[in-house]
Length: 147
Image (cartoon, rainbow, N blue to C red; front, side, top):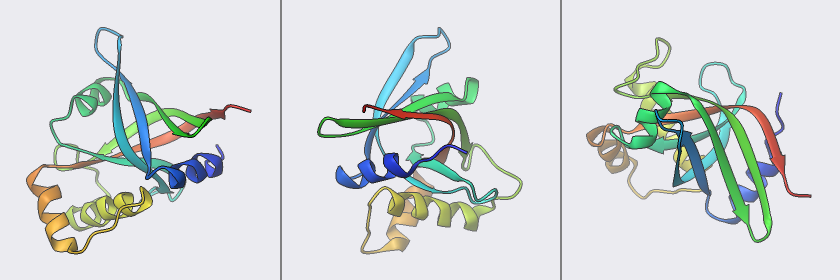
């Protein structure tokens, strides 16, 4: 099991801001800034890195073809990277053990894990559904950092 404690520690220092890298179909790299958090997988309960993405986002299209990804967090001169395969759970990427209610809760859990708060969770839920937001769960294979 990959230890995500240092990654989580750095996330807390800069509002969960990270850079997610995915592979395009031509094998070039696509990078985007995302908010992420460390949390337990809703089915397996192992620690993963989670983020939320719009249903039509390029990163989701890339991950559907090739789930390999890397996510980097930085705080000052300290950084940590987690590499692994991403799993997508959302309206366009159903999972047999995650129904609509479980997805709603998972999106909120990821948002909280990334340091987010909200005054009206029903509005949050409405926006997530309207934008067909999906959960991206990165199953860590490797983690590394600067000394």
